[in-house]
Amino acid sequence: MSPPVFMLSPELLAEVSSGTDVEVSGDEGKHGTRSLRLRIGETVELVDGAGRRAVGSVCDLAREAFSVAVQSVTDEEKAHPTLTVVQALAKGDRGESAVEMLTESGVDRIVPWSAERSISVWKADRRERGLRRWRSTARAASKQARRSWLPEVADLHSTREVIELFATHTQVFVLHEDAAERLARTPLSNTDEILLIVGPEGGLTDAEADSFVSAGAQLVRLGDSVLRTSTAGVAGVSVVAARSGRWG
Image 1 (cartoon, rainbow, N blue to C red):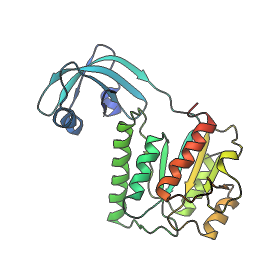
Image 2 (image 1 turned 60 degrees about the horizontal axis):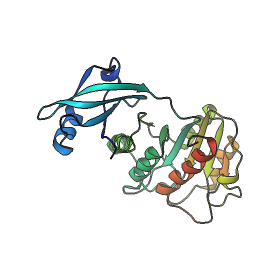
Image 3 (image 1 turned 180 degrees about the horizontal axis):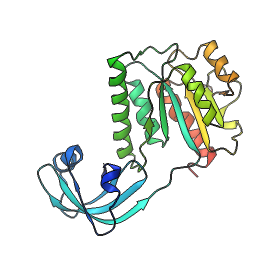
Image 4 (image 1 turned 90 degrees about the horizontal axis):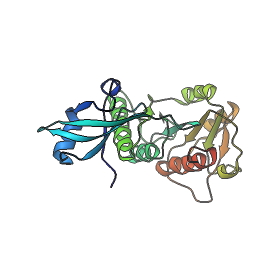
């Protein structure tokens, strides 16, 4: 069984090296002592969400905290090319399900998008609650997936703001059920940044699809079946990750 992973602040792990002790307190400390019931000598991993991973063993236990004797520290590079997914807002908990699976699949950035046909609408305080849920989901999924890099969950984007992202991504794919080209057969350029756009339950409007194509995006489909918005993204990411070398 793999050692449990705890996420600490980059500041706390910045000066950590082999032979030092680190105290884990707060929510992570409570989780370790109360939920996981860690024991002295048990191996754990500490990550900072920015690529640093420290491996060590539990050397001290308190009621809501524990200390780790660090044995090794590694600074891990991000996967290449960088992969951003624009995920349309979805009804119920499907948006959070999408964030969970996208995080587990290793994406670098998730951008919530208020598409024209999005059933869910984030306004005022609901917008802040939605972002908190998505970011909390990404954090939990990162630990589950044993990632040292925490994906960024950006602020809510409009269609115009999504198009503005094209300037920093050299290849942009839009999942569309009526597209002629299949993502699995579409040539990938030698690029540093890939952007994948996933529409809402009702699909893209013609205006959205046209505006994306006019700005330089390519419409692609996955297969013959139509996937939910909560699963289409992770399916698309799997194809791109395997073909681009991220999973190579």
